[in-house]
Image (cartoon, rainbow, N blue to C red):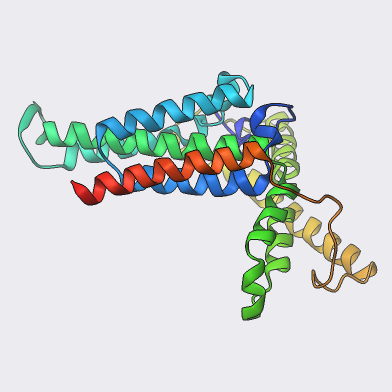
Length: 269
């Protein structure tokens, strides 16, 4: 059974690739631009272009494609559900009829299922590559830097960045604890390889201890921050200073060019 130990989404993979060396703000902006392109266009030619871009980025990260795609196993149900939803419920020209179910598969449904499934896959792949090449601290710092104009509106950008950093930091720790709890419950005779209803019922003895552990860790962290007189992010400095390089400007230029082309053709046609 695929459980907590298979969930590696969001974990950083150290490296020295072209993508790793980019400024985290560049990676965040470029990812958001490309994700917007994925959502805006549904033309087959552009979907092929987006697939090529994601594949090229995979090679630039120098991370095994098996590792990147392995992170998507936990979301496979979402892709399959999206595909079946469009295939079985979209009206149009009949392609085939499913006997005994009263359902009809149409050409439009099949095309829509493939389109939206591919769109979800591309979004997930891009998100995985962003988190695998950017540390949680770099990601939080980039959000704080990009959101600095919001400080004039009295929006606590530093506190939001801190919450994001802590959340991402504790993801692998909680996954490790979940795996430990799972092994402990299995040693007590918990059966996971049963029918679906029994599986859901058997998950409860693992979820409750995990919640208790999460609350305990949050309380310990709050006490530790209070003991160190933490008063928020106002006026705090950063250990690392980020600067844009030539590769950052090139990456942003390519991302903006793709966005411009997609927007131009969508408005024109």
